[in-house]
Image (cartoon, rainbow, N blue to C red):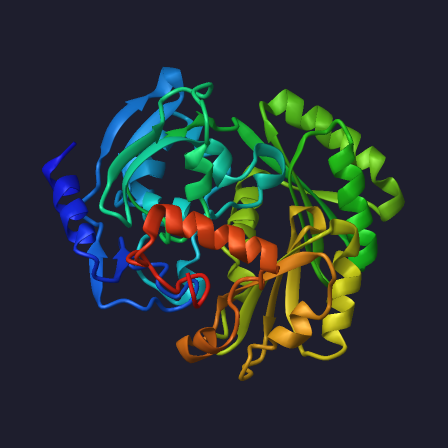
Length: 379
């Protein structure tokens, strides 16, 4: 237990509502907190453990992601869930941190194959809203007894615990990659093609559709395997037209743009939404929205993730967007602070789920000290 962690615990125990801030690159995600002070987590940085042979890395929550990714790249390893960088989308010039990434539970295109950020957390240490220092998990995969608290932290937006140190599972990086490209497909046909590809034995690690442009299917691994699977996939999808292939460099450039949502980053006045829906319903949902809004969009996760931007509106078009589907959820990723304060940034909860969330919040932070209001007005 370090002195910094002890000082943090003493500060939190004082009960003053506080906003947790690492580098500040994600301050525009979620609602503004109802806080009187800031908990600066930038001091909790540095990689304290990295064992490439054991596929494990431990670092302070304030460690810049750029530092972690640079170290992993030197050893041909990666965080397999493909951490996105939303700095361009959010208009930030700051580099994100490991703690911010995990707290927001962010995952990139490879999520459909490798799992989400929460699936790669082995353990953590932190301070609860009660000022209690505690640890959960460990340094190996099979270490869970009782509650898997590490998974609970991912996507909690700092409302439960101020993370100080995080242990992550790392995996070997692919030796190479290629992307099979289909052109000219409408949304419905593109989703059918992506679904067929994902159901095949070709081990597709990324499936996205850019309307009016291209449908992208990524293959990763050693070169002979990639070539074999590429040829098999092209044959499997011949009913959707002739396929082109992006080489390794072109493929990586394209998937960074998809991962970091560069396609919707341009006009900062537009609201940006992230919709998680049943893939087979994606095209129909977008059609309903497009009849009412001049929206720009693209699909990731084989149609299960819709990134969508809409012109500025008092409610960021929340009623139209959320009224377009019965199952799924829509998160407002980018909008002015005044808009994020007046609408539900996260999908409204059912009464039962809201009650459960409130009990979880109370278990860790009964006084509402940590990031109160970041996700929901009363939590």
